[in-house]
Length: 379
Image (tube, rainbow, N blue to C red; front, side, top):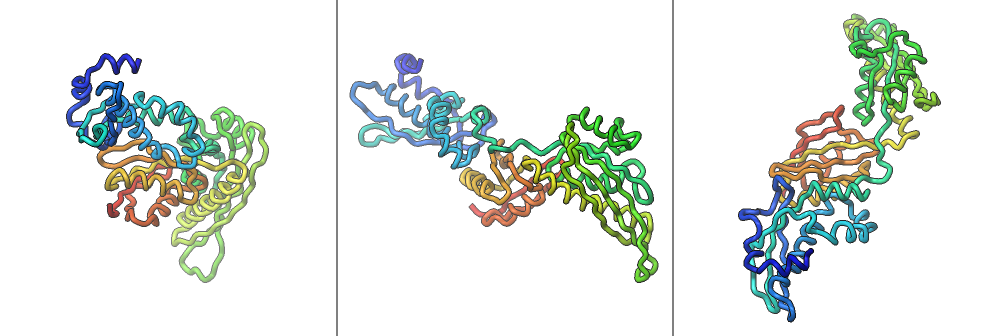
């Protein structure tokens, strides 16, 4: 097919091919790379054939130049043959448009400056299909059904204070948590029995059931005249679903003080829920390989070299198992970051310490595992 193309297409047609105004950088169909190659004037070949060979080299360089945005250097080194056979052997499969921006005579031929539009979405899909993008062992975190019985002062009318705090903190750590004790949920827990909760966990496709109780009790403290002190307690067990094997068991207490007894009790329950989430997450992390994904939207990077560097720097952060660029646009880029026991807040803190970027945090959405930052660093 390629030989037929070389014979059939004259040089003038090749030069006319392409799209005017194809500028290096982000494009709605991918990314435009600019490469320099030499078309050698070899005996026995026509100018069109010489140029075709040079174009193939430019296309391979254009595709190869983007690979480190999708796969880490150690993955690349260990998968050279796979990449050569499946990606770089047919670079034209990823080139949507091209043009020759300049031709410069050099000894033995012509130097061509070629601009090639790489279909980055297809490239990423094919690399994913080869198993080169997602780090080994990144299977996500277990899905959890939370069934915490909460009664008494400060417990909350529709959603328990401790239960809601526990859910939010577990979600911030990357877990998908459904609160079975939430009365606003049409399928909320009716009887409070562990049998009912276990059946609901199985029906919901949960991997873990966290079942237990929470309550708050007043604490007498003569030093707190005019204030109310309460102690909140959460006692919970984590069971595997459907085997019902006990994975963890925690009982925690936390206190709070306020002028209002109701507010003090509610705060104590929230504090206990936060502490229970911290301990249960640590327990489950020992059972499951606790890896999850965080989307990082970043703006303000000056040039493509900075994006390449940022991707490498992110991969080197403690707690990061891998990173892949999923979008490149005029205003910035998006990265999908594979983390281990790392929340969006913790990832943001580590990014802020990276030298040379001067990051500013714009948005942190813990529940959605989303982080938005802007770089005001130098070139």
